[in-house]
Length: 139
Image 1 (cartoon, rainbow, N blue to C red):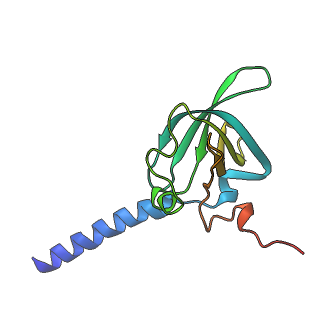
Image 2 (cartoon, helix red, strand yellow; image 1 turned 30 degrees about the horizontal axis):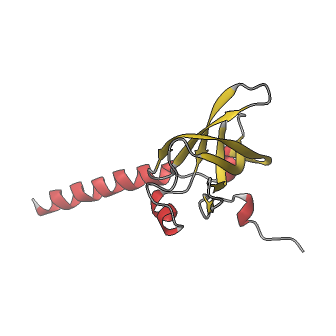
Image 3 (tube, rainbow, N blue to C red; image 1 turned 90 degrees about the vertical axis):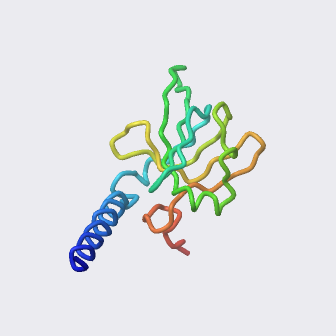
């Protein structure tokens, strides 16, 4: 009986750990360092979820057409350590988001920062992804 419990517990740990590990990815796998974006728009949704949070912003294009962008952030625990609270970014806020667009050209980006209506600038990126801001500076 004890052996069965240990095997079952080990299986559950591996199942949950495997899902978490497979959910993470390198920056370069999905986002293009050669496609930096600066998005000005209205927040439509905030998702503080694991493993990455999401900020959804309606952005007007040059033709006036509205596009909803999905901005990937780091996870909620890292955002909390950087000063975020549930009320920090609210639906309806006019924000400026900087980041890098998805390789597939979709309105998806890996966010590096968000500037709030009061001028406060918050860092959005995950560490250890290979994003450009993590690369050593060349002298």
